[in-house]
Image (cartoon, rainbow, N blue to C red; front, side, top):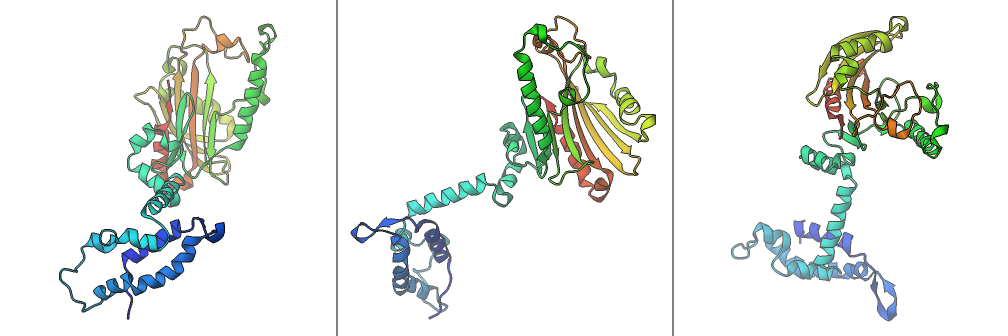
Length: 353
């Protein structure tokens, strides 16, 4: 007699694999895996009883009529058949449902084969509102949420560990300074290097690292000003001055080409430019710059050249945020979608109130 593989057999087989391995008490109080042992003999009895009759009905040429099964009955059997079959195999529907639920939860929580990334990408706005993109990629991008800003980055990129170490050192130094009397606080000019250097608040890059492919967010205190226009001027003027005096000065051997300089509706400046290096490489750069005013009105002017002032005065200074994304130009030419992804990252940078 030929056997036909059907969905009930497959369903019961996987149910047994998931749930029939729980230890049960055997004879004389010895713990044995009774479900697995009992299943070997029951399978033979099942073929001789219920499954044999079902196979006869499924056999070509078998009489049809009132015994014809609908799809639901074909999968789950007649009322009571599924429970009876599972009991014969040493398990129960409840145990099977619990095992399936646990397996599903593990698959979703562990992002098995990217299934959770796919699901949250179907509702990107809801996922970002719930900050699920900090755990799972939404349309290929993850998010880093700080207390005062949020930035997105490609899901394959990692947080720069050297930045994390520098941040830990800076926090330790600030903690020590905060415990010192105000009379002993450093009032002199900034010193170069060490803890006085600008340390990014966040930095990301490819797993193998890349000098010309990275993302960083820098936060700096500036002198009290009314707006970002009062500090930097209009976007085009600000980017031109930045390129001429800092990034691509005449003595640096670099050449910068301004592509775009605009102001967003939320007040942030957006810059895009192409930098040609002396070694012949071309680097495409996107930047977003924003100013966050202090929560309290300043009671005095803070000299931006002072390294350390009274903590109360420093807390009243505005904060200037700069997000910079760098990618080699050849990557954009070989994969044009990288340019669209870079603009998504640029738009995804926001300063939180």
